[in-house]
Length: 190
Image (cartoon, rainbow, N blue to C red; front, side, top):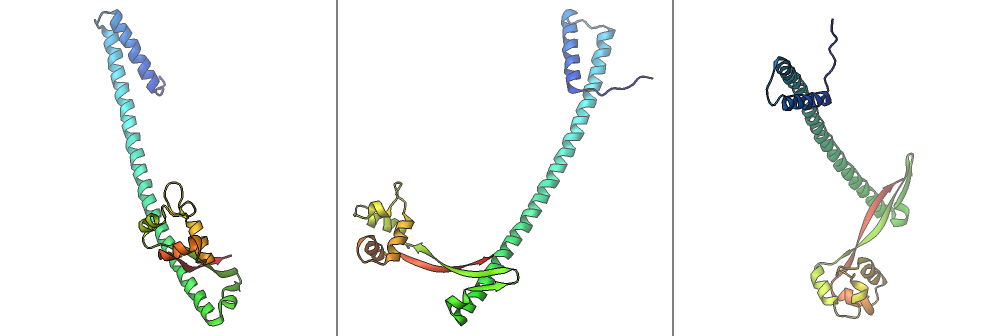
């Protein structure tokens, strides 16, 4: 009884190269041994390639299942992210209503069994027409303060100027161009 060993791709390549050398030495003439070796190589190659085809199909199907599962999980994550935003928005509304009732200092923080919840006030710079703002500030003495090197607004400097509310300097120029600070609240769960 002979034991069948697994044929590797390397074995097939080496056998094909050896047969090629035999055919070169025989000047293209075949004999029964070469014909038998060619036939056996063709059968083993077909068997190996069928194995590859099966494995490639299995890997492709598995990959498709993982992609489908990834899309499903991404959809779930998106829904959960949206629900998180909605819950935070509702919690913010509850805390803002509490602040309206009790006043900012008394209502902005609450201790719960799970930790503290508090509101913060933040400000964000709002400039209705940034292009007009850049054009108006360019060439003035405030240009280096209000604009960054690649002609973008230096929002931190403009915000500082608006916070100081000075009529002189950059603050006055900024106010003349309808730039405002929008105040908004954020909620934090600790």
